[in-house]
Structures are given as structure tokens and as C-alpha cells.
Image (tube, rainbow over all chains, first blue to last red; front, side, top):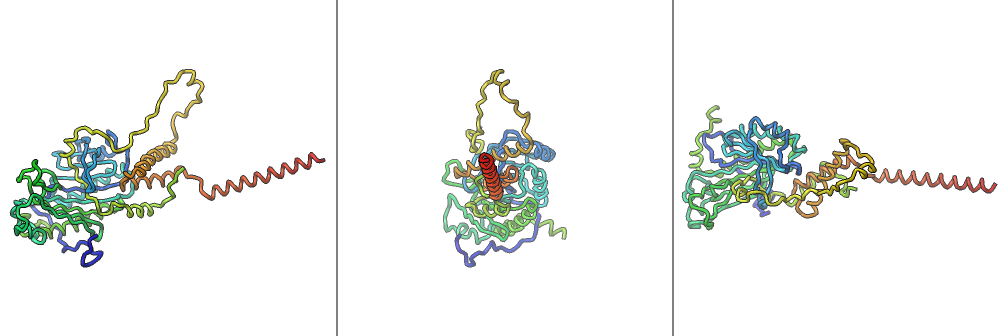
Length: 267
Length: 152
């Protein structure tokens, strides 16, 4: 660990009040629940109990052969995919993880309801009373040119870039890993690849075009060893801290683009 | 014979804390665009299930063999299932390929097998040794009685 001025310090950004904006930058939102491995879930057929429980909201089933990026490398994995109508939400079940992901995120309230239903549906299938890891990840793409970030991103993060110190860059990213009072986090802000959520843009790659570049704010908060009964409380805690860092990382133009929160309007 | 010492649920959590994974992983994002270029799965990372050779038997051989139980009991099935899964995980562990989730399931199965098929503990062994000792003393006494009767 790189020592900070205050050894043992955790993420320290101002708390942000709950908000629900008319617009958001979320390209992908994922909640991943890892559990002790069950090899029988690698089978060709999906677990019957889970299929029945999910059928109403996720009527489309498909088998998936996935390249899973776990941060420590890429791994091929078999998985069962359950999609909602219009393919906006997907439940993915692997031998050691259950995940809910969406590219049409609207509010945390909706998201947590779906996560809770997913956990209830899978409880008997996953045969465990604890999750080895609960992860909540938001990948945001800002609707601005990567050459014009001034005002969109907190200047404390991008000042040398916006000041032209680095000139025209083919690649730029900063990844921070640290701890919070409830677990850990990975914060990546970067020129990302708009084609692949979470991927870093690489201008030296002949397959990429300048138009693929997008400014990305990728927030991944997690907690390990969580009892199944505590998963939802943990999820809310992760979301609260994640939103605080997200809020801190934005500049005034980004906040203006988000608009007013209707949670404030209701007050 | 299980070689993993008895562990409690709390110890499972403690062992997981000592894992090398701490803080170095991200919430996985499914990369379907990357996967599509791989097409059909070429290989499996898991060990292939054991293949049993089944020799075509003759009617005479079938008549000679004692009838097998139609079905294992539920307990026997549970033990067999847990043991098979545990063996796969032990193999991964010793290959150095076991993930945190694999190790967690290994600990769960070890506990489960301890309950379903408990091994002989030190107390049971001691009781057996005492019983053997008693039997040997009784046998010695009987032998002594026989010698005295023979001498009469």
C-alpha cells in the first residue's frame, strides 16, 4: 500500500444526498454476488428452480460463453443468461457468481428491488449462507469530447490533461484502489472505449477510431464475506459511498447536464 | 479419510481473509463482444468428469453377482455428491488454480462431510483401544483357566 498522509485512512469525499436525475451517464450498472463455487451450475441446462423463479421478469434464456474480466485477468466461463423483455436487464449465473446488469439504469430504488428479487430467486440454488464478495459497479460515459473536459470532470483529477501538459494523448487513465469503512473500491477515470464498457481507449491500436473515445468514470465498490441476509444493507452502503465519489468526481457542466434531482423537487 | 482439519464457519471467514485476492479484483463485467470472437468453447477449465469403463456383462456373470441396491439412500447420495465435489476442489487447490470461491466451497464441503460421515476421532479410538485391551485381558484370563483345568 502507498502510505497516505494519514496511514490507515479510508476514502474521504464529502457525502452526497440521495438524488434521482432526469438524465444519467451510466453506460452499465452491475451488481455481482460471488458465492462458493458449485460445479453443477456449469451444466448445459439452467437450474430449474431459478429458471422458474426468474421466468416472469426475465423470459428469455440463453447460454453464454463469456470472457470475464475480473481485474486479475480474463477468464473464459460458461454462464446462464436470463434477459428481460427488450433486453434491458440481464441476470447472469456462473458457477461462482450471480450478477444483475443493465444498460438502462434509471434509479437505485428500481435497481435494488431487482437485486433483492434476484437473491430471493437464487437462494436455494446457490446453497450458501454467505457471499464471498458483493460488488456494485457503475461505468459512466460523459457526453463530452475527450479533448474538452474542462468543467465536466473535477479539475483535481484532470487538470494536467485539460491544461495541455500531456499534449494529445493516445491513452490516459488513472486507477485508484483503496478502502472504505465498509470494504474496498476501485476508481478508474480514463479516456475509455465507448464500444466496450469499462475498457480503456488505446489510440495506438489500429482498430480504434478517435470517435470511439469517451471520458469514462468507472466506480466499483465492494465488500467481502457478506451474509446473504446482510446483502441488501451492504448494497445500500456501497451505493451511498459510490454516489459520494461519483458526485465529487464531476465538474459543474456535468452536474448541469444531469439536471435537478426529483428527490429535491418532492421535498 | 479427510486430511483437512475440522474448521468452524468462523474459520472459513478467517481463511478467506488471508487470501491473496484482497482488494485486487473488480466486479466482473460481461464482455460479450470479446467472447463472440471465440465462438464455441474450445476447452473447459474444469477437470473432465471421470469416465468409468463399463464392460458388457454376460447373463451368467449377472446371475453370479449379488443384486445391487436399487438406489443409494439419500444420505449416501449426499455423501457421495459432497465427496466428488470436494475432490474436484482439492485437485484445483493443489494445482494452484483454486479461486477464493473454490476454497470457500471446499471448506463448506469439508464441514458437511464431517457431519455426514464423521471420521473416527481420538476419543473413539481410545475407546476402541480400551475395548481391545479388555478383550485381551479376558482372553488371557480364559487361557489361564484352561491351563488350570488341564492341570487338574
